[in-house]
Image (cartoon, helix red, strand yellow):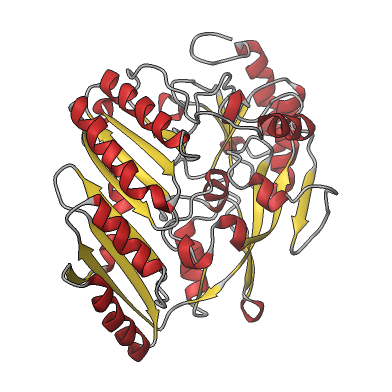
Length: 430
């Protein structure tokens, strides 16, 4: 393997390319370009199978050739995780994009992993239904990609995360097996809850080819409100008051930055009368704080953290904290950023999952993220580095793996014994 992360010789890939072309159409096998690099590691080939059986057969061939395979959907989150220890072939699911079955009367949908979130939602909306989540970059993000990265959004407060919404999955294992579990079962793998197991596994256990989800009805009406507060402590008190009230908010998030005062956003869905009644109660809870009706665009605040001008001075992280740690965590961000002359923005949802952007010198970014990770991990939380400048000193993406690492490694060894899929990218170097 050379310094670029490539593993096999040119002769091996020349022979392999011929075999792959015999399995899939010639226009679905191409050399990788510089733009296909994953965290600095440059693969040699891109393969885009057209159906599940082709993908499984391709994966089996690559596994038998001892090559490293990097699954890719829309490519919107390929920088998440650690750099791969090897990168030979990108296995794309882009052509596996069909919506197989929308059982609208049963509130379920079966969809191929390469379908984009936006296309799925548009199809479901024709029957007044939705997959109740709001992931990043829905126009490009695919079903397989959001499952692999466990990316849901603010609606998780009301409808749960992806592990709550997924009821069935089919994955291609490195040995060529197509294994299914959960709803719409074709084949079960005894002992494993595959839908939950592969959600958030970053494609290290198998390549997701299709999924089955439970659905929810589209709301008849929705309104959002924003409440400004003076300090993080006031924000935490407000969020707790809303959470402990009889309000039925669908989403609840707080926005912070080094420039503006904190703002908390609340989303209600339902009948016009019901939302008006909840608005009245919310105004009582807000008290003297400034409350105003907001545009639905406030829920794109998490997405806007990825809108920055200079990737060489910007880092992004996902944090998970106890709701009671909201104010102490934000105060620590303030202090840490000020000490290292960093600019920052954050969006933190009421269930304790947040998103942080830091801007500054690469060395200061690494120091800031390390300091914040220590603070959060000491309070039973986590900080995951999602994106960072190439020149930033090395920082593991995941932090401390915890007591579950031996079990995670054992599952990996059972499903992917040769570490073919995304080697080194996940927790603990899995």
